[in-house]
Image (tube, rainbow over all chains, first blue to last red; front, side, top):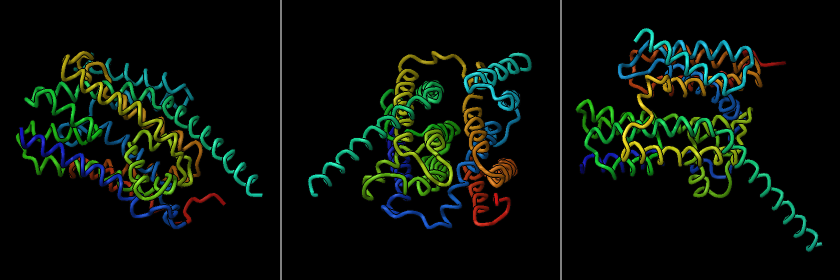
Length: 103
Length: 242
């Protein structure tokens, strides 16, 4: 149990330090224009990578499963400009149905 | 002169206050669906940690002080597979290194001195950070904080429920709920793509490909950090709208 508590503390401290690094380095200064041109694209890069890793990640490093069907359905209804809640509901239902049918 | 200056400043102050308040509320509202999903994930984290013999206090404390689904699940997975503390901490740090880039990006949009900004930056989580992104490297600080608060509460309450009551949601995977987060991220990505230029789409495509290529060969966390490199395309003129 000591190991668990020590790990909890270490992860919490590391997490806080990682998040604090940027603001501590920069203070109230702005990013230089070149850096800003990079961070402006960071959201798309991160979100695209997170879509991939959250869809295909698993206990092994890589898993093709029902989530892929859910995300495909979500992409299609997004193209039709459906409201967010509809997109999310259909993705969840498609994923659950695929699992129920193919285990 | 002084009086009118004071007056103007205080009026400006209240206006800012109102704007902030609106931002907090808008953020909280925008994060509501994320909070729901976070609560369910919190429940499954509680159940999982309890099943490893962590007792009641440790899983709840973990959620209170770390507030990081990916890192906490990674720690549980490493311990569950018989790994030790160093491996668990490494996995968690690797997963959360992306917050370094996100913290740098958001830093200029935060308020106050170094210390206050460092505290405000604790509100950085994927969904809130993306919801607060205004394009062009600008972030809405109030919206980000407003979006994080309900998710934090949901994560902690979910963990408590999971630890005390057990699995009330049923099997997250059986219900298809594991598709929630990738779908949310896809929705946020599509919003980014609708607002921005062609270069944004190119970066997203390259980032997705890079993550996909690296996933089978690298530990979790590495593909996402590596994909950040594609944002360096911002330094080029490729695909920039004239």
